Length: 183
Image (cartoon, rainbow, N blue to C red):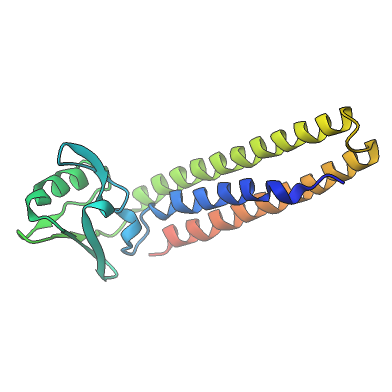
């Protein structure tokens, strides 16, 4: 019998990557995920903010970024301004305060388009994994490791698995879209 479970991790990795990708999409409330992966030039190296500073959420609309080394405060400021987040940090000499403005309807629409792009990338990732597994099943049948009946049974099981993961992607997308639309 062909073991599909050994490939489950590839599907799970695709879903995990999607979740990580969309966590950076700005909704109406503050979250460290908005800024932690922004790349900043510091010490002549490009690094994410999370490697250079502590990030905390003060309230629903405010994030603070406090560098471990005060000398890179300007670098963090410049990196966040250049990040296309639409947030201008307030530099008080010790930390950066990021106050999230309310999202306009136009910006919400842009975020939803980005979300849909990321969801489609995840679906493509699931399809690629499916094709790899299908090829493996076909190869196993040609090499007489599994019977023709086992091949069709495995392909049916694979399709059920793919359908479940696509449903999961759809559900994640609907939840994030609702979060973006919430005022």
